[in-house]
Amino acid sequence: MSAGDKPDYVDKALEAAEKKIPGKAGERFRGPDAVKKNRAMNEKITDALRRGFEKLTGKKVPSKVSN
Image (cartoon, rainbow, N blue to C red; front, top):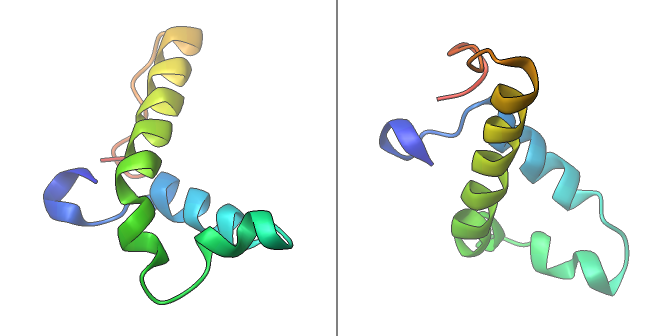
């Protein structure tokens, strides 16, 4: 996570979506240390989403939404 490890709205949205994955597949996204374990993977995912948004729209992601 950028900006001093403070999650932005995009990071929080991904973490919330991961917690809703049912069954055994979703177990790795729940628990007290799940966010810490998945942080590197989540950062790659959210970075790719930001790049895709910027490429598609030609605009930067608003700083209010993303670091």
